[in-house]
Length: 109
Ligand code: SF4
Image 1 (cartoon, rainbow, N blue to C red):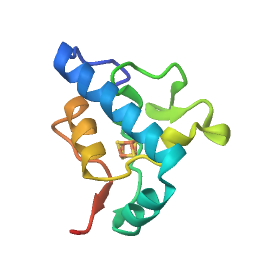
Image 2: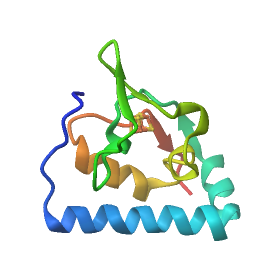
Image 3: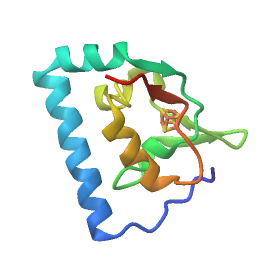
């Protein structure tokens, strides 16, 4: 995936804004939900960089040898470290890169 930011509709930006608020809420107020959901999570990050472009392209998104990389990897924000929390996050991510999949997936509840 290139570093370019796709054009998003207002509805898609709102969806992403809600997702950011949702992750923030879970991160601050509902760690139990994150723990339970992550227990169903499998796979690994493939470094596609799509989750770095939810609503806006993150200013810390860098590229090393053509591969997306976080310039703040060692001090990543919690919202980034916990991504994806659940299927809703994957749906948000798929808006950015519908032709590829996140390396993570979730076992059914
Ligand atoms: S969308 Fe998934 S595979 Fe891509 S960078 Fe984010 S966590 Fe990694």
